[in-house]
Length: 370
Image (cartoon, rainbow, N blue to C red; front, top):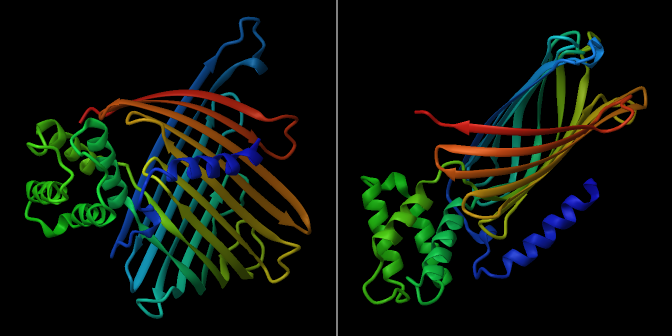
């Protein structure tokens, strides 16, 4: 199943990318500042009508994840926090907590070589104690926040579709609109920013007679202020050494060898492709190690409908014996209004000693009251 995820993402990227004159990943923003916080909860109760207790179900799952990515020409940092809890009244409850953060400093503002220092903490119900390690090393690569250009492209597409623009904006004008959107902090108010964006669009020479109307301005405002929307591009690779301050298995503190890669790509405002991977272990890395990898793809089907697919892989190897966990997730999210959303999720998971894949189908409804 997972072998089709990446080819499908690439095909959609190629189809969608042909319609835009300025690739998102060509945009250069002076500051990259992206963050995402997601919370999910599910609960299931079933009382077996035949009185078979082993068929009763009374359990729930709670997941919270936070990601922050910040970068400037001179330095940057990233933070990832994740907590999974499976609470069962009738069976074994489990939890897993992960926290990772690093700071990187570029050797030169215009170059992509950097040094980094970071820390990683991990804990779960099978561990004897908290696992904590620190690491430092060198790397190469850089990420770019393309959200402003993605918003500008969405505005351009809407205005052309509605007939307010006789043709798509020239790449120079499109980048000008993106620059205005990204410079919110330089304006006295949002109204000032909105006026600057309107002047950029009307100054392109492609606006219909009469200029932009109230409905156009309303849509532009909504696109600029939309929360939870981000697009970014770039990649980096890292190698380093670490030290295991706390061993979760209660063993000796080991010197660690670490490696990681991150990759992000978007050809249109409708999509985002992400890939992450890491490996760490003592110097005899082939005998004992931990490998984590994630591949995710988001596609905005319409203004109110989003599809996301992700594959997560985790492997722990002890004395050359690997233990693998596979998890595949599909989320279809409908957001008819800004304060409410409905998400249909299909989760496939395979753990050691499972006879077959565990399958969960979840329907979640969220409403913002304040």
